[in-house]
Length: 196
Image (cartoon, rainbow, N blue to C red):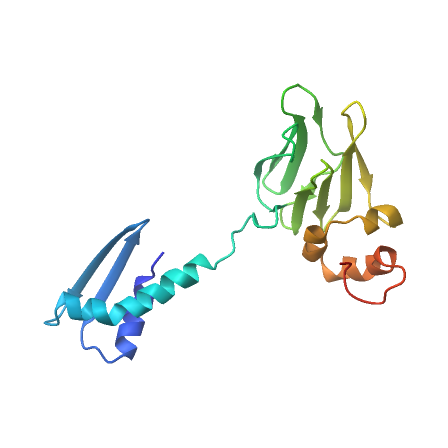
């Protein structure tokens, strides 16, 4: 979205003695100017600024971190094979509720503990259908399906095998306090940095 105040500031800083305003509604731009300068002259001045603004707008990361498949918003998120859906909603104004629901059946798996919306949280589906859920207030858990398709939840805590398996996308999201605590379990022979 083009910010009209930014355009006015940019034109004022270039010493143009007129008021130019831009209004953007999705892809429709309206340009208005009060001056004797021709529209063509004005467009020649603002095309580089407009190109830079559009380029920078395209560099903005999305809030749901879709490029890394890290889930940080409410909604429905299918497992990689489409067999299950992670449904994230609100139990109340302050609690985040989530469930794993079988896509073609009626089985549903829910956690024993919900987490606070005020705390930092994320979920991540691995390609093999394992679901990781982290919240700063209740910790990190992993959901795995058994051979019959029933999910069970395990807490990472000091479980070395689980901590070593934390996906890099989720590891990067974790608070530094968790990383400091888990780094010796994640890489017993290393002193620093996440695994490759």
